[in-house]
Amino acid sequence: MSNEVFAQRLRTAMEKHQMKQVDLVRAAQEQGMKLGKSHVSQYVSGKTVPRTEILNFLAATLQVEPDWLMGKEMETENGGLKEAASESADPESGSPEGEDNIRIFRKSTKLDHVLYDVRGPVVEEAERMEQAGVRILKLNIGNPAPFDFHTPDEVIHDMQQQLTRCEGYSPANGLFAARKAIMQYAQLKNIPNVSVDDIYTGNGVSELINLCMSALLNDGDEILIPSPDYPLWTACATLAGGKAVHYICDEQSDWYPDMADIRKKITSRTKAIVIINPNNPTGALYPREVLQQIVDIAREHQLMIFSDEIYDRLVMDGEEHVSIASLAPDLFCVTYSGLSKSHMVAGFRIGWMILSGNKRIAADYIEGIKMLSNMRLCSNVPAQSIVQTALGGHQSVRDYIAPGGRIYEQREYIYQALTDIPGITAVKPKAAFYIFPKLDVRKFRITDDEKFVLDLLKDKKILLIHGGGFNWNQPDHFRVVYLPRLEVLKESVGKIADFLSYYHQ
Ligand code: PLP
Image (cartoon, rainbow, N blue to C red):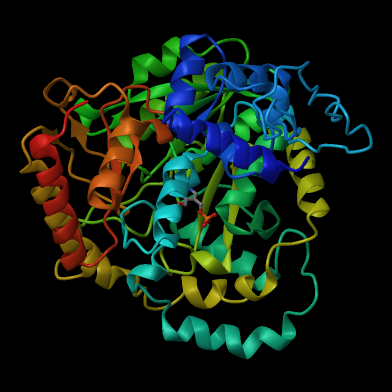
């Protein structure tokens, strides 16, 4: 039995009963069973098959036999395929009945509670539609290059020049020249107590988030993560065995972290707090006073601070980005940034982290970071070779975020146009290229935000991510990436407005 056969039969049964993936997730919820959207999507696409309990649930819900779902051929009176009525297979053992010599490979149960919907089931549905020839307007992913944002020529030129010298591994934490440039960048941002050895390059910030969570969290250790969040943080903390405890960012207060909520959620097992500043998905930028309050709480409860600052060079309206680490010389801080967004080289995979402040208290943890960093040998060397060029000299991104620049003008448009739609409100973003608008759920009778974005996709061919994809637990938000050109944004908002003129759940 192959995963494909299982997937094929699952899809057939779903079609027969006119059930969509979300219907299965909802049915599971109603029965108190844990079945994530990403799981169902993996079953449907043939990436994996479920364990016994889920298999039996799917079979019962779709009114077929588990054996049939698992690919067993079964005779009917008239010789055709039948939805079998014999004993169920035991997919846990990996040996469906009658196929004892075939082993089934399943993903680790460590992934059971990991959610990463930025590339989840709705996106898969969009891919299916595209394969069928449908044009989709994509406002779902923060990847600048497809929207005609290009890497400065100088950066490409320098990489070309250095490519032949980048064949070997670099030191595990990165090329000296790259780390030196990042160290000088840290100096400009007043991040205290940083030497070149406190800097690690990574295959994007993504790799380093994963590395830091793996090095820190024992089973059950708690870490405070914003809601809404960039979901990789929650996913990596969960995968590492930790417990992601979400603190609320308050829309009424420009999406700043709610200090009372943070305090309420600290326990004896809380090790660290994560902030994302500037923020994805809200576009918020935290002022110094807000950062100071977070530092005060971290100091009081002896927490480490992880600050994801990948958008720190995409701040508009003449505002200044302050690194929280600059306010916390006595605490241990890890600050992340990279070139994916500021230099439009998300595909090159280059990011970094800076360890700062009181490193003595984290000596053992740093040992763990070093171990994991050594184990991956090094990050992409050609991409490291452009860090010095990228961080020095003219910053072309500034032209995009100043009035008249594409990101600035697109923000002005999207904020105005979305908030002109009856039933939508939003906080105007100050940085990055995301907006996280609120839907009037009473007006549209929305109870399921994933269904909302799926319905919009099917009806208007526009792809957005629902708020739940960012660990936001109300069905009342969605994220728009406003990187596409104005014409595309105008077309998209027009369609969203039309959709919302008749939509309700
Ligand atoms: N952190 C945040 C807040 C992001 O939005 C992203 C990407 O969208 C990342 C990290 C990952 O960036 P990288 O390309 O450096 O892995």
